[in-house]
Image (spheres, one colour):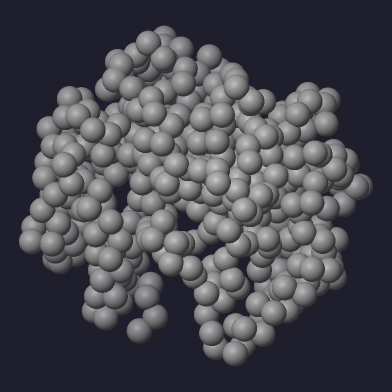
Length: 224
Length: 235
């Protein structure tokens, strides 16, 4: 029994960040799969504030919120390489900045573009592209946001490599096109090919089914 | 200490009412770092702001040796890491750091957003917002009891990361109680936090930075008038 346990669902993009971090660093852990429609008493006990995944349990002590967990992993297993954050404080601040930007701006806008239709979808896509431009610039001259190897910000943006093609197939729309975002698409490919990343992806056909069903439900709820 | 004619390479772009800006100034005070405070004019954004934070165009922006950093909590961590010989802002134990980060993110994600809406809300909407905030305070009281271990601050004997993250909102908390005619921080429900709030505001690194209630109330009225007039608020 490993001293590290990770509460996750099969599809949670936030939990996947933690899977990647643990795998990339070679930290032993047990996975506990949750059904969010029927949350375990353990999950409710360990994350009473949000009642969500991921939760990392280390020596019986729980930590929630993916960014917080990533920082904890980095600071606890200091001998495990690669480092997720660089040593220089300014570079660390930049990594944290981009990660936060991803969750505050990119994620909600891409999600909007995925679940909406018509004019709403167009507007969401325009806003998403406005913000993705900053990421495209940031990737100039870099293989990963973390430099030569996958780092903190790469892990938090990893959902792009994983989910965008799923969203595009389900919604029948191009979310990130090659002409506008060549560096971003290259990054997505490099990320997919990085060690330990693709092996842990949820099965694509399962994701397609899940997000197709979710999109249909959400669209049906929209006021006409 | 603010030093407007300084030639130091440490600058803070901000405005006095912003709790996020206050966080950065407290952190610099803890480390006894002299800085130049560049106050943004209400209603407009300076060239320097737009250049140094093109992504969000918001304050605070911290500029160190010409290099800009945005996002208050990221700036506070940077300050802690750079001026590492000064008193520590984050705790030393990784688990304690995780707890501090968790609750600081909670303040930004769940506590402050409803708080800032109370003053202009009414009826059911207002009641729901007040409930969110008071429930948040109950959770923070519990967090305080666990984190402080009987000492004055979340950080123990000295103010730390979570004290800064949460304490910076106290000005608006009090102003909201005034404007919303509602009691939020209640000694009967959250006695620890009431004492903590007093200690925090009196701390040497914080003194003078938390705006007086009357000033914030006046500012809020200005903000509301501006919004009614159709001009978009600055941040």
